[in-house]
Length: 209
Image 1 (spheres, rainbow, N blue to C red):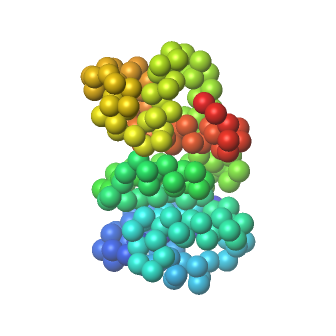
Image 2 (cartoon, helix red, strand yellow; image 1 turned 120 degrees about the horizontal axis):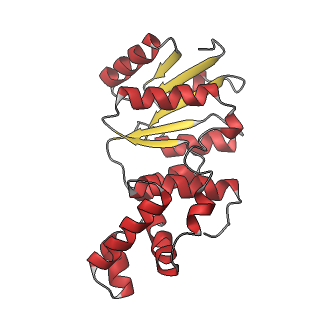
């Protein structure tokens, strides 16, 4: 792996941070670890390349705020979020901010390592596109009702909320969701948000589904 790329890891859990650093270094990756967003910002130099593995809940500056600071500073460092308290709203906000992925703890080491090595191997401007290239084609396979349900799911609404608003049964919306997941090629609502948001970013922030 290139010595010019660094995996920056920010997690306020010392044990988890040490374990993650060890795992990445065993894969011959150059790693710099920090227990807070402030520590990272004080040490990071804009010319440094690589990726940032970032916990959502960290002291002083939380992960999403740190993401906004980096974006305001025009720093295009790819971010993989990790959290033990994931929800669709937080996930959607992270992806709209340009995050590459959003993983729920405990994260499988192999899965995380695969994500990181793929990022390091690709140009930053073209990272995180896996799974979203054919999203536009998949949309054409949806029925009008499925498209409407898809838009609600991407907004973070639950099946119950969508059913109530549409005055239909929960099972009806559940069946629509199953069909949507199958046609898009995802297995969860969070994954759906990731793929849809990357597609929207590639085609313009205000591009409608």
